[in-house]
Length: 370
Image 1 (cartoon, one colour):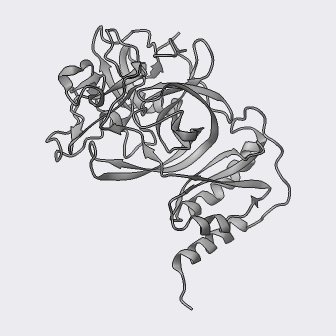
Image 2 (tube, helix red, strand yellow):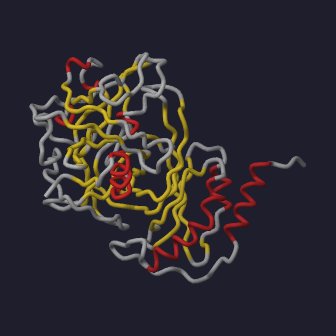
Image 3 (spheres, rainbow, N blue to C red):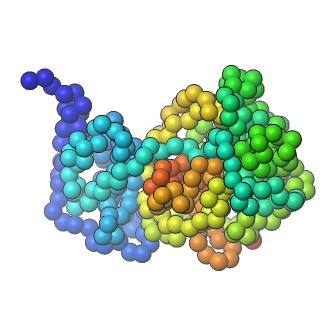
């Protein structure tokens, strides 16, 4: 009988996972839970011991500290629903590891949520009268190649050394790294426009320049997907007001399991959800320009996972949206949204984002708000 190499790898991984299986089940999670909670710490310890082996398996997209269907703290394993190995992976995983439940979540592949082609007529894509609010369609002014134009979301306003910057994602503003499809690459000083080219028939003259790109090159090296544009005077509300949300707090807050959150983005507008996973390890593939080829695949660690059933919270074109706590006034920033699938959204923790931006711009980066 022939040996199946894939089956052998899965079997070996399952043996690693099965080491020291416990019989005690962790108690039900509270309505909100941070990573320093004893239950979450138990899951975190197991996650650290098995994630490296799991990520080597074809079809495993990531892991996170989350909750199961009974709202009990659990290790969540994200599996590509289109992978030929999905059934073998599911069969190989034990139901518990050292008392920690293991929950498999089938999903389509995680992808960076910029959007090529097409458009929408909702207000989040309309050309605004300056000074504009954020949480709106926008992007790099030359973001067209290979017969498509792209765009994302100009998500929020930050400040470094007294200078205000629009904050979005690397893959929305900076990701054009080859001259092939449009004979140009993203460079500091180029215009960032509102709306994005996707919403003005791929014609930059129909949009308005609201900032100038300042390359900080977060990817592929850093653990965040962020880019900034220095505000053009008079073009962006100095309060940092976000469509559908208003003025946010200048303070930030750490993510916790089950925390209610909201965001405003180019495609789905103002939407709400809850945090379903912490400390996630996920693998994302990036293109080298609008509708271009693969530039690199990046594995992020320590990420925030948000429920996204039917892409109702986050969809293509919403990349760059700021995720804030779901409170009526002055919500605090939680994360920077950048990727996901039709069931899962992913965000960089906001404090890690601000730390990186500040280090690149030579100061302390803070959210603009009250």
